[in-house]
Image 1 (spheres, helix red, strand yellow):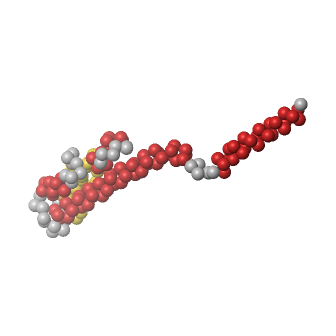
Image 2: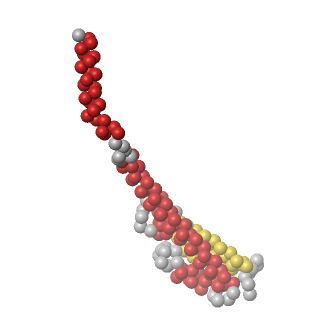
Image 3: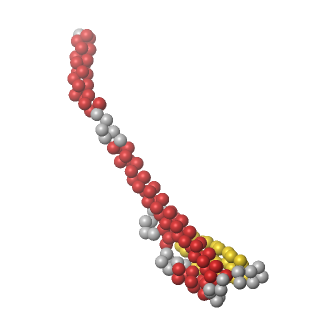
Length: 148
């Protein structure tokens, strides 16, 4: 009796193996589940990189404009520090409406300073992946020796 059970179970196994063997050999779509699980995180990561790149691009542009304002005041293109600050505000207007720009000149050391501040959320665009960007400002300060 025991031998008969073993022989039946072996034949059932053989039929079961034959039934599922095409699926065991075919590995097409084996990564589908893993890809479906990881794809949302990957997309979120890519959008986060894009959002941070907008912030860094805005910071680089802010620094460039601060340096241009300093240079303009330094060579006499702007008659006053207020005029240099207004120029910087107008140059950065496409980025944000909440810009703080201030140009100062210290005659004692002959150095022109320009500081610019913009909310990071305005630089990041409308992606909104990082909610922490709404809580801080991006600030740059440039200085240059007066040339005339």
